[in-house]
Length: 125
Image (cartoon, rainbow, N blue to C red; front, side, top):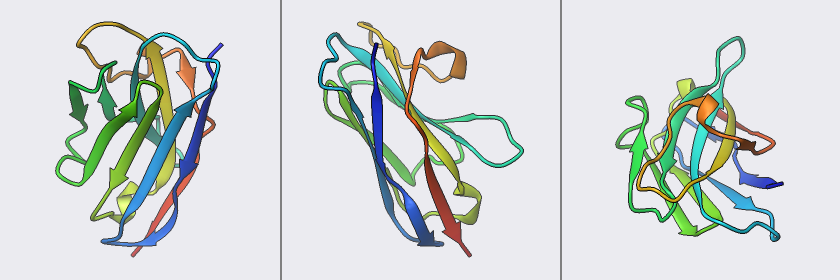
């Protein structure tokens, strides 16, 4: 069982910066593709960004391209740096992990087995 622990997030004004981190539990072994998703009230969970197992391939939703940066600090630690935040970025953000050893990253909710607890990001106008 893999436990994902999220940190970061909070309240920021439009145009500001926040950073989210996602750490797999210490007992985790193996390699994982990881991703970030978000869910606003009344909406479905949507893809934000994803990275493959070694950090060599990554992708972003069109809505965050050029503003968000995903990175893997090491095999079981992933960050999401969010710049130029907009009120429409307000949501609960979830990290996800899926065992993988390919160059692919995954962009669909149903492609991930393990999920973090979620963290609130609120951007005020």
